Length: 115
Image (cartoon, rainbow, N blue to C red):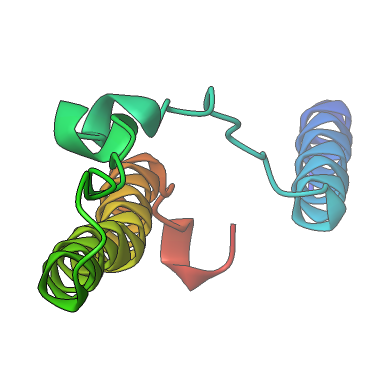
């Protein structure tokens, strides 16, 4: 090589070395975390699940039939209250599905499967 091209070659080598060093450092960097605000799940609760289930009215009479009717009505109210359990589980599942959908949208694509 000619002497006049030597400084140019050295400059190119130095620039390439710096670029390789920078690329190597970028490969070692921690991944960028995307934090999202927690989305409120309370908006998914329908009003009928937040209302109390009243007990059946206590019978005014003392006959066995009155008390059997009361027990039957009280059991019906218990059945209503037990549906709240499945309703609460459905709300949690809907909230988790919504959050997973948002997380999937925010998930960053990797460059060349590495970064």
